Image (cartoon, rainbow, N blue to C red; front, top):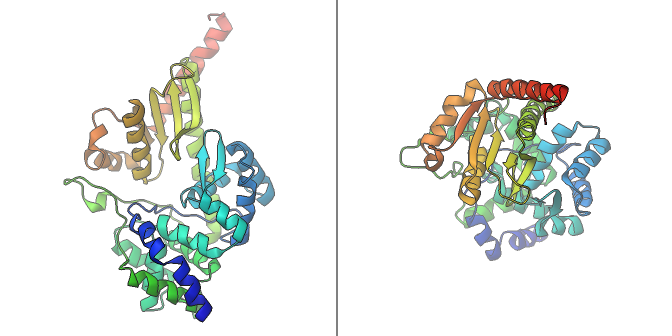
Length: 363
């Protein structure tokens, strides 16, 4: 017990307070890694990233190593490793941050816990709730919903539970979860610093309601259905993204996917000249998490004056409009919400025109 307390103090001491205070926009999206929510899997993948491969090289290696599809790998790495701040995209490459490098060298799980506490919404909340009482996944899920996160099922809770088990913070008994001795020490330190469960802190305008600022997750009744459902969604996303990429090329633009913008990436960017800034920025969002997508589009508009396009489905068009009327009202007059079917129509027209030009020989 003494060793645990000392370690916890080192992890969550005064130096850590300044980091915890910055937790204003923790992501509500969290996944397993290929191979599961295991620290040894995370360590192995970070070892590959330490070589600073291109993103394509890294995805191909992970897909081959763990027998997963590239689409699933891409979403998993982004949700677990990049969103938690263990690695960042830099141009065509991915590299470790100082925190990722620290875990790679030390294999200290507290480095990962620290990253998750700071960057992943729900990690802190689950620890604090379990400090009060033992809970089932369903009970934890309902507490999350009560705080304003609209997940359609308990899968996002399940993924957090699995990671917290790997980190040694919680254990399961008689169908419910409880804190380990180490987890209790972490909870006590969080309470000492005045850090309590809270809704995701999303900056809103006066007219925006909290209920509008939600993330809709996949409906996943069982954990063994996650891979198939997520892969289908990602592949659909990527097909739409690739059509936008091709449309740009058809129109004579410099078209690029996964275009870097600070430590994030736009799905597609079009440029008029190779060395110029993007004139058009595209984000494809076929489920309901619009906050991050619109954040990137607004940043592209602020930084480069890029025309922002949000590609979504008929189901979510109205929800996307609410975000533009509220939180992202600064770009409401320039942003375009486009149904993905329109992208398909435009792609078909542009491709047919290109094929005709090639057949006739018109340059």
